[in-house]
Length: 153
Image (cartoon, rainbow, N blue to C red; front, side, top):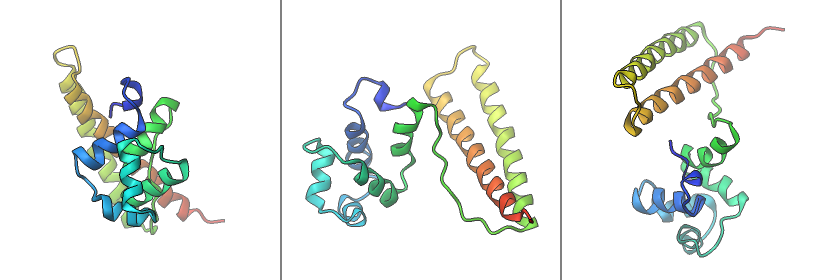
């Protein structure tokens, strides 16, 4: 995902506007209710009339579960946003995560190799590879969490 913060745009407010108004991915009234603020207040944040406070960004992320809001802050710092999970440990769940990790890893390598055939990677090729790599990280974290829960004292 290209970080709007690095594209010379207004920043977080532009991302907020894009996701909530252009994409219409989340209903403003529902999101505001989840954030425990008025619809008008959220619209003011979206339109850039008010700067959204950090505490409200946390509420926004919790209300939408939108990873791009986290990526906006993480990418420039060199960190990756990976959602926490509540995994119930079992041998079956470990095996399934191992298989899923292997499959996505293979697909990622295929996608990267295909993108490199012409000697350059365009935005769409990067986007596909990035999504797959993010999937690898997510599954790896889930597997790690399951294994951590399996540790016996």
